[in-house]
Length: 275
Image (cartoon, rainbow, N blue to C red; front, side, top):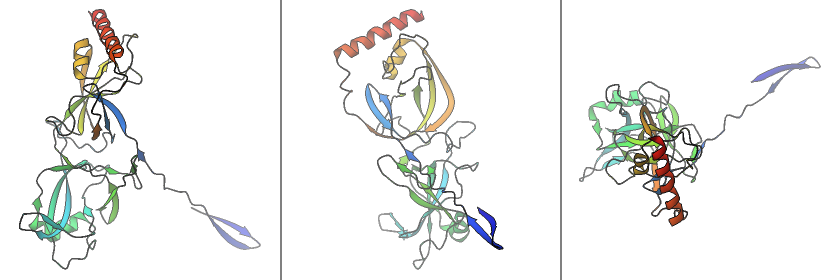
């Protein structure tokens, strides 16, 4: 902002600039999948526009400008053109889950001469063609990065650039993630990972309440561990975007025979106490 002052009869305007360039770095988080570490990013629930009846995310449109399709049906994208979104984070109909829609423009179209989704649809909506499948593309704050250094991609929203990450194909299905609000240091647990039936980056939160003070965090490392312990699991209606990016091939080194034995003993003791 500008702050006027007077010196020797001359008005001086001093400019004070507040830097709005704070960047968000998304750290990778850790969870469990059948006794193995799994690693994911947390984009929370702010990008989840859910269907009132099913509770599933409702895809928002993401327009891609093309000049046509090759003989195999592959889209010929306009080089350098940013995708266009009619909704931004915070809008009622915005969702991280996107339906890619191709709009065909003339061969002489100049990249980024259209910067508004509504304008693009008004001009080329008759050529609209939905892509097969959906994509997980969460919009984030400008300048955001993933902790592996991956940077955002630009898109147009009402003549202004916004930034997003592209985590590839996704569906509107949900999968459950078990969380432990009463246990500090306990990682959440999932029962499916990318490449398997049932996997989805869009997770419905289930809470596992453990009141036994003898429980050691991360004793439970799978759904079967939790089920076998007989503890209370409550399914909530909260849905978050947690794309899993990798899962370790083997259990952690600490999972030796003694650790496993201790986990079994602790589970049995708590199951007895719960009766």
